[in-house]
Image (cartoon, rainbow, N blue to C red):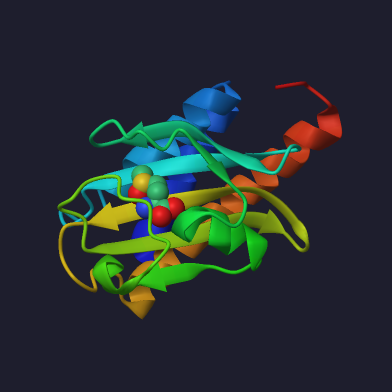
Length: 160
Ligand code: SME
């Protein structure tokens, strides 16, 4: 868990120095992306009240999937079923929305506090089964920290 602790410590340092919400999200995406060279696309999708996921900060090739309805694709299914999804081979998933034809595996970890889902971390790899249990744990740790960030923004009612 050391790597995830380092990312969280870095985020906390930035937060204490007055980094904005958007800067913190971007720093989290960067930290996660740098965890493993097999991560080819790393981003955050935010859940809006109209049940649509909207692409936030990301690293990797631009994607056509800027808006994804709940229930659509791997990302939308994770929200609809309120669970994380680890797909070892996207070629075997029927409702997969291709970001890149080179993608082989995908991990979606929800950013949530209990029943409240704020957003999700989405990571794609060109390698089959790139996400083992340890990786899932690392991403979960960072997603949990981000859930606290979303929760406090909501509590403070600071808008967007
Ligand atoms: N593959 C995702 C779409 C997002 S892109 O991978 C960035 C899905 O099936 O929902």
